[in-house]
Length: 413
Image (cartoon, rainbow, N blue to C red; front, side, top):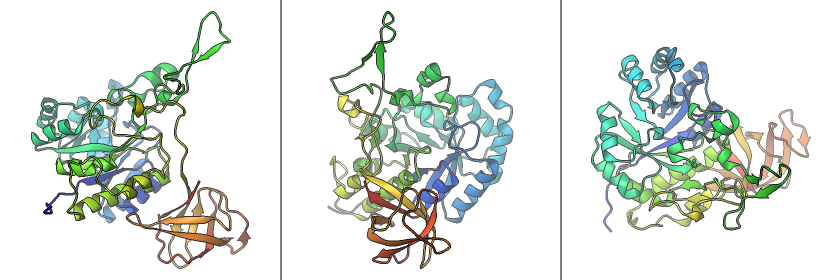
């Protein structure tokens, strides 16, 4: 097959903290998305104004773009400081705003008219006419609804001059495009204002009113009681077709997820995009056409199992996880390289002991295995165990040349 020139989509990674932002950049993100302390749908993964300035400066120094989410469903009270906040984001150097509310969009266009507007998936774009409407409102990129298949994505893309962005990995909301009131009803925490309690992941039982102390299990096909618990989205094997369809950006969900998740998932999708760009034998019409190593790598990250979601049609029974909130994690994060050099400093994330076999996660899918011989604290004292949060050095076999700051270490479960 003759090699075709493919434009490589932007890889957009989540940044729930400054540490996660730096990690995503280290492992190859082209752009990151993050939130200030207001107007975001992730109330517990936000940045202060000073942190936003610092984050944008760090990202730009590495050639990485920063998009700020301003995607709540706004009430009148939310507009009191909105213009001031948007002006600050423009001055701080944000590369774009992620918006779903038409009112916020209107204020943004008046306040920061040169700042690109990206439409959030919360806007539920499921058809070409809707996409054209938003394009005509001045939106430069649309994150399409997660309820679309490949054919629909390609059709919409072919009718637009605006860019198209697709979620390819991460948690799926049980409600349509994330518009859910279950959390508000059960806990008083409003998902549409960034404070979801994730009740779709709860285990449910049935209570009959005349027997208040008697709870009955709720079962579906005898598989358990997690009746709303969707598997996680994973389109790693669908990337060749999405690239061929002209998708401009692929997005990873997970600002609330761990540092290890951000590192491992960003790293894998970076490697997959580079592989597709450099390989001529890939047929985008084939369902499974990437080497198995890419999917195997993602199974080493904590998840609820994986689904293609609506890629080929509506999800089926097998796309749900009924017997627990998540599947057993195959590997665990061990530590983060906080200082590079010949004697790198490691911050422990799980207990570390001499004799442990550890894996250093390099760029691409490269990794090296080492056995820990000795552990020392930063004063040089020998340790029998390092606990989470401890900063240590270690003697390993074989030695680990070139360990880089922000890199992750892990071990098998």
